[in-house]
Length: 159
Picture 1 (cartoon, one colour):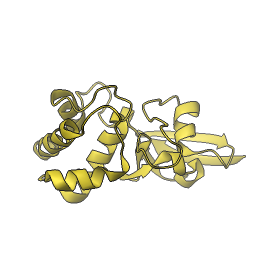
Picture 2 (cartoon, rainbow, N blue to C red; picture 1 turned 30 degrees about the horizontal axis):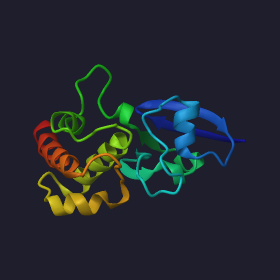
Picture 3 (cartoon, rainbow, N blue to C red; picture 1 turned 120 degrees about the horizontal axis):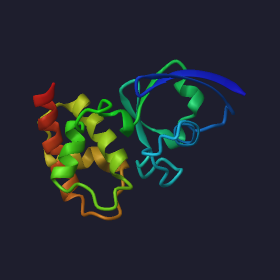
Picture 4 (cartoon, helix red, strand yellow; picture 1 turned 45 degrees about the vertical axis):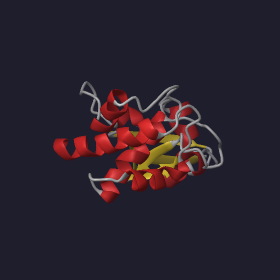
């Protein structure tokens, strides 16, 4: 067993885990944070994206022990408890950026990372290029792209 200590959504977490435990398994099974989804187990669909020290990572190919001593933020921790939705979440709701919702947490976490890296004024081409590692099987992506552009602008206003 491996002992890990990390911060998840602002809360300290200590656990003894099998060193082979994936971060997505730890979040879903140990912490019951089921907003992070498992879609492929091969790092190709992006449904498992979380932030590790503020950067987007695919938690299905990240070992939980790699998060030891670090901060993890999941979709559940994007907006503060009791607060309105995060601007990117609100943009997905307002601009119909989801259908079944399975890919949505990973899309939103990827989008927030994108804005943090590239700024608030994003072209459709940049958004589409940055979403290359995220798959949606329901939409034609246009509403997702529109949602991310709107969310990026809303994040600038809320900063």
